[in-house]
Length: 370
Image (cartoon, helix red, strand yellow):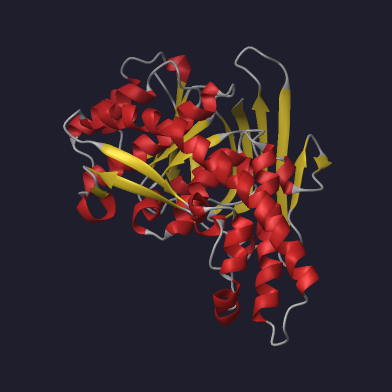
């Protein structure tokens, strides 16, 4: 599925935008701070029901405006007539409304996975430099786009954990029957999450390593290692064993909400060993592997490449351009501050396969392609 048209009102610094896209390559040019990333983020929002850069929905409304609206028209294939109309509206101090073909979703989780998206952006650095929650979010993001059972388990687990934590914080001793009920849900859903995460990483690693080698060469070896408390035993047992400490701390110390994904270069944490270029290569390979993993499951994701060329040498840039120009990729959005790198991509592409847009102070115009 690909995005044919988008309509944007009052989203970040984009006051009013109406664009029609190419089903293949869409290049967005502009200086920093003009709104390139905001356009990319609007596309992301229509897939995930949230922004990639700001989780507080109301803060994505244009200053001095009372609402924002996004509307996307998607086509199932280049030559297919079937379309999907996805829209989102948010007024200040009101609930977000998300619709598919004019019918409002009762639960936003129903929408996740309909339009898979993979984004590569400067914010990805938090996957390496940030805490474990960033790496769990990456696993959740991939798994939730194709496995509804996983998403439902994750929602149930988090709800049960919040309830258990509330009981742990209370001054009064928790009622054992109710506490055990929440722990049972945590244990059941947690085991499922653990099993699915572990299976995912096992399949994902060789795809990721293939992409890293394709970009950097065979001289650099990278790896991913999944870590979880559940590798030591059943979560129900771990929760019981940890109860006394949990009660003192006021929250659950054991569980899949503490899982992590170790990212290594030459057997050492890339956070400590990697250069800026190696970190960017690692993250790009990670996201390209995410694309291939989802595509192999039957749906080609839309790819958003935001400022991808920064901090990479010309050799690695050339390799990445070769990869994303491959026919295996579907619709791609690429942002950059100048046309130097973009022209390399477009050199061997037919004019009808791409569009170029220029962004200035929140205004976006399509440039004429000769």
